[in-house]
Length: 174
Image (tube, rainbow, N blue to C red; front, side, top):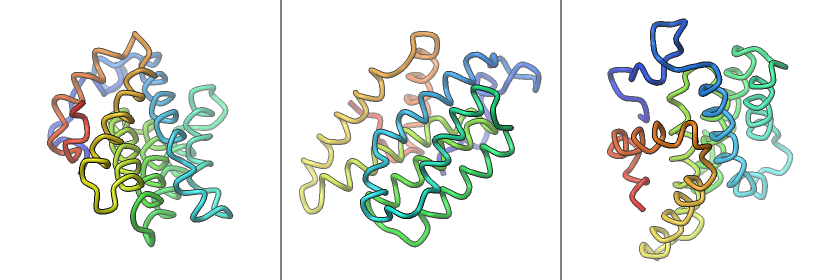
C-alpha cells in the first residue's frame, strides 16, 4: 500500500478540488516515468519479449504530451503491474515501478509508488544476502531520483517522501 488513507489535496488537481496544477501533475508523471525507466532493464533482462512495462512508461509521457488519454495511460499502468504478478525480486519491482508511473495520469500520488518500487528493485538486485549492499544501492537510487526532480515539484515530492516513507517500506531514507 503506497497511498495514504486520506488523500493529500496537494496531489488532487484543482478541477477536482485540490491544489495541484496540471503543469505540476505533468511534471510528477514525467519524474515517475524517469524513475521507472531507470530500472526497467531489471525487468527486460528477465522478460525481454514483454513490452507492457515499457509501454506504461511511454504512455505516461504520451499523456503529458496529450497523445493518449488518462484512461489509456492508466490501463497501460495496470497492464505493467500485471506483468509483475508472477515474478519475484528486481524484475517484479521494476514492472510495478512502470505500472505506478503509468497510473500517475489518473492519481498523481502514484508518483511516489514509481520511485519506491524503483528503489526496491535496485535494492533487490544489489542485495541478495548482503543487507548493507542493498541499503547502499537503495540510497544511491533515491539520491539519483532526487537529482532528477524539477525545481517546481522538488519540495512537494520531498515532503511527500517524508510523510509516506513508512508506508513505502522506508526506502526514502538517504
